Image 1 (cartoon, rainbow, N blue to C red):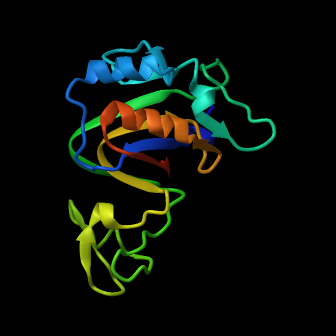
Image 2 (image 1 turned 135 degrees about the horizontal axis):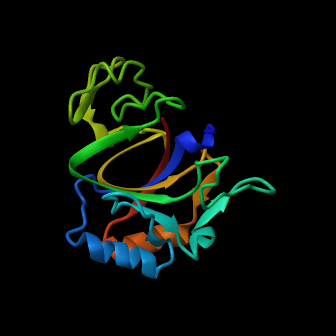
Image 3 (image 1 turned 60 degrees about the vertical axis):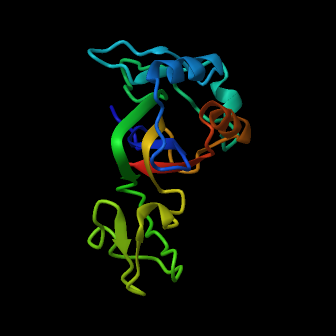
Length: 186
């Protein structure tokens, strides 16, 4: 069984698109030390998927009066909340396919309706003013991110949960760059 929640995630991303960690295992250890992640989820050749750590609920605020959060898979439901670490050689754009919103142009501040057709690997052409700007300069309205490093928290529907400032501050201290967040649904 699969739910709409299982298709959506909350992503944490550094402000600097080209930021990456030089020592991935040290970064993983630091995330474990702050209690965001726990041990690795055992699967074949998987060094990117981790169970949530003991401080996870201190760092992520769920909206609503009684959220149902599942931290392990069951026989009936294979969607559960865990953390995936994504690293790329060059910055990538991750965006929401099903909950998408048009990004706003940095030059004219109007939504770019045909951005996917007007995009190359690093820029987007605004269909309103004709300005070509870097992908990271657009206002993606918390529905996309452009970076080399992403921390994905799975099974979170857009705006269902919000990372707390303490988590963003801890990530900033670990990496010497500020962090932000967005949501994406497949």
